[in-house]
Image (cartoon, rainbow, N blue to C red; front, top):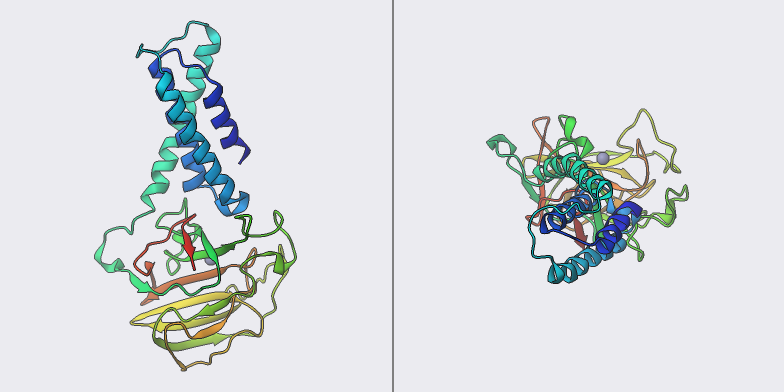
Length: 291
Ligand SMILES: [Zn+2]
């Protein structure tokens, strides 16, 4: 959060002696801000600050662009200082641009036909939700390397400050905005499995040995949807129950092998992870869902 602010300030106070200097520093700043949105987790620092940084950069660009020098080439009149700037900016660009582009590749479901996505209803409806892990490559979704969880999502909720919790990493569960939110069936289907009886753990404690904690598996069409880490004693459905979209399943908790309260959801068909879209949207890291 501090670094992108410094980048924008650096951009704003710079005097561009040539248009090439402007373009280089523009690309460098835009790439770094892009990095914080594609790869970084906005829910940790406050998405509101994230928006302010983007806005400040846009405003700064719009004022600078009106006062550009006529000359196109690099101007490095003040010697080593300018040369160092150009080299530093080029290095930042070379380092971060490929990472951002690789992250963006995870925004689409890759093309092979056996990976046709299932469309579900978003299972939460009490605020503004944000995706922590989601997308189709491991840079933006750590689940991606696991066969059955390839397209799994970890979802948090934003509080009034645009952060997922009050505090950086509090141990009190109710400081996490999503803790205790109702969880609804994402489809018309059948309950295939209910596993319960696990306690909610205070971060950073993790439940080893039962990774999903309290969880429900719902059959939606021919896919199995797992909703994991649910709240202790909150599950209100039983195995073989028939459910309709929007029926209450239980609440979001922090049971199982989890770092903090969140909803983990994934879909699988024949033991393989398949992509999920929610109301026809493929969600990736920092996607926001308003409910
Ligand atoms: Zn997960």
